[in-house]
Length: 180
Image 1 (cartoon, rainbow, N blue to C red):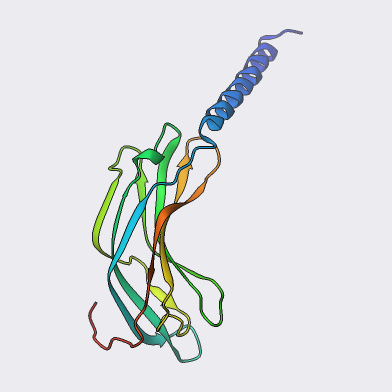
Image 2 (cartoon, rainbow, N blue to C red):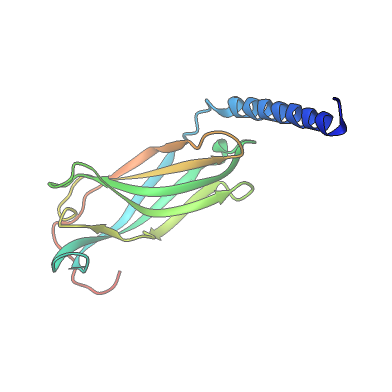
């Protein structure tokens, strides 16, 4: 009745139960931690172009370009349970056709052990700031926000918004130059 296999099975099941309890205990120590830090965002240049939209019926759409400065100290976010952070800068704005538009402009992955001081100057958006219409022209309330996903060793994946944002007015006229 108490063969080697049944004893090994009992030992294995008990070990898994203990490991699950320890993992839950580790998770609960950081589950309620506030992971917000102050973020400073400044925009130095905004440019707007009206370009052909090849996805639809031969219409033209707005394409925005933003040059920004970003600074934050994300060291308080890192603790023993944080494996990496996925940072992203997003723009939120409203148009006549949509109450809420969200566009990711820039992102970065910060691994444990890397530099936790963000001090970025004259950064251009990594992804196109494309509006499927003309909702960027003369829009006075485009809000830039830095947010991050915390990737833990054990537990949930919280989505945290930084405690600093900036509202950017877009120009009323389109640029005609070829460069940015």
